[in-house]
Image (tube, rainbow, N blue to C red; front, side, top):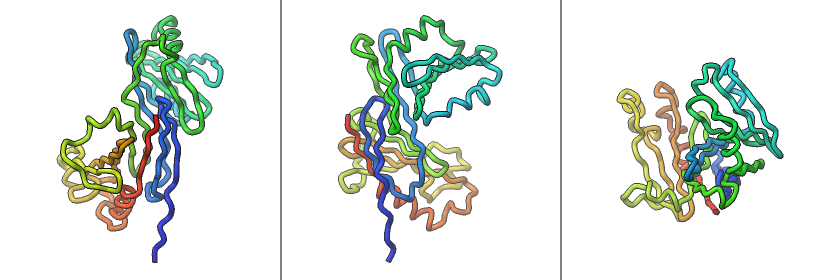
Length: 251
C-alpha cells in the first residue's frame, strides 16, 4: 500500500497585503515565490514585480552591465536605482531582507523629484512570508489590481489570484467539479512543432482551478524532446499536483 505524503501548508502575503493559504502537494516540489501587482491613479500607472531578495543583483551583471547604480537607505529596506549605460532603460527596486519589488521605466531614470513622488505614494513592508506594496494612504488616491502570487520552478508555474477580481477571466462553460472547486483546461499558445510534440500529454494545457476565494492557474513545463514527456510517472505527478493544490485568499 502506497502512503501519500501530506501536502505542505504555506502562507504567503500577497503584494496587496492579502493572506494566501496554500496547500502544496509534495509532487510540486520546492517553489520559489514571486508576486505581481499594479497601482494606478491620476498621476501614476505602475507595474511591480516581486521576487525573493537578491534577484536584483543580476541587473548590473547581465541586464545593465557598466550602468549606473544608486542606493538610498530607508527604514527596513533599501531603494536601489539602476540605469543602463546608454540610458535606454532603468528600474527602481525596493530591496528588503526577504523580498524585493521592481518597477521598470523603459527609458532613462526619472528625475529625482519624480522618483520621490513615486516613493512617497507607496508603502513597502517586508516579511519572510512576502512583501506588501500598497498605497501610502488615501491621499495617494491609488487603486490596486492585477495582484497575484506566483510559484515557479523548472517543472511548473502556479499563479494565484483573488477570485473577486479574476472571475471574469474564467471560461464561460462549467468546469469539472473537484471538491469545492471547478477545474478547466485550455490549450497553451504553442508553436505548431511544439504543440505537435506535446499533443496528448498534460503539457499541452494550462489548468484553471477556481473556488470561492481564489483562482489558480497551473502550467507544467517539459522539454518537447524529454524522455519523461510521455512517461506514466510524469503524468501521475501532474495529476497529483492538480488534485492536491488548493489556495484560500483572505483580503
